[in-house]
Image (cartoon, rainbow, N blue to C red; front, side, top):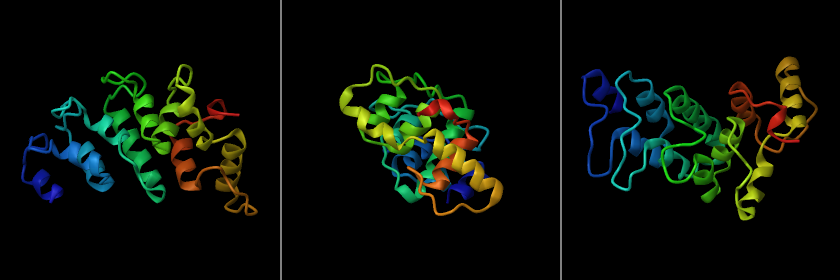
Length: 176
């Protein structure tokens, strides 16, 4: 349906009672549609819904299923490429605070890897940070990718999620 609207030159930014197509896709976690919409040259990522949330913030308030973390992270990267301020955001809270508020581990991982400040985050939110890649995770991941095999080592996060984070620039400074 989304592809059809886009091909027929429909308004990709059209508002309905539930928001724009981008906001709806972000809030329900439809990553395939979200990627398609974010690739459209006329998409406006700055449109806010009635509570004044943009699609990026709506996505951070969502809960991706662990098996879809890599798709979720790809969409966050697309928002960043489109010019969303992933460190400061446009809401009262930083994007990192939004993701931590709902225990969105994939969002927290992405935002910390993008340079989000951990200092000043309430202590009650800090337990979520151990899911970030460690130095050992990143080294093991690179070794695995290079040699296509790895002796059953378990990472603190999934390999697909780690792959997306490393491709997005995660480094040793992330943690550990």
